[in-house]
Length: 278
Image 1: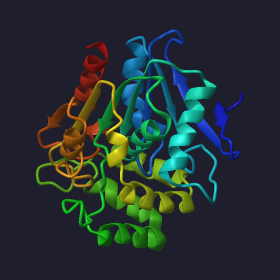
Image 2: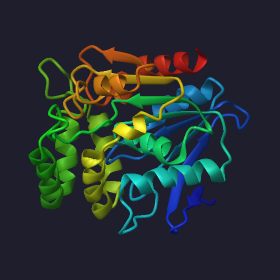
Image 3: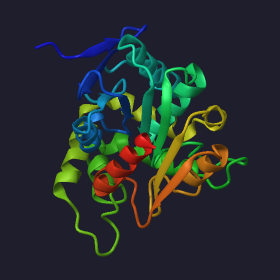
Image 4: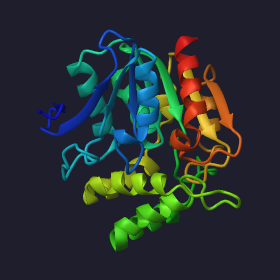
């Protein structure tokens, strides 16, 4: 059986899934770092069962897509997304991005506009800018991202285990019960990605400024963020994005960690479906 993929202009093969009825309203889900489209499977199954055509893809260098040496940056990610959309000729799309995927969809809007887009969703997303700068004093210092890079070089497998068993799902908080299944899935998805690709992507998600991209959001927009997000803190991300997209609806999940696609999957599924029906 042939593996479904789109070939980009620079000969990168992008793996994708196309679930649900082909005549259903289109939803695209863009995943986070260092994961794959599998990280969206709860929402993809729920929405496909509700009659939507749900398309998810593995970002270049991640999951089952090619692992190119070059082009591991937001401009290429956005253009790869455009290649998927254009090749499948998708229209009136509800476009959601989780974490790094939120940066990808923001840059897509910045580079390709919203002609094919009906709605936009930023889920625990990295925009407008993660890095602390003079203009962005609420961001995270470069030392944080240098530390992730150093840990990736030293022992990438352990890094993914540590992120998943700690701050990503909030399992480092008192009173939580870690899920071995969630931890193992995160680790497996991360290790499927290319070492060079996931390393380069740290710079892409942390140092890319999406301010001007967000100003081009001219469609109904949903922003969902966990109040206790230790990976992408809400004040510098979800709340800052709301300021730049005043018409957006901001939903805050009290006590929610970064990985709300898993920890709050039922609530998120309902909120996404309600937003698309509104």
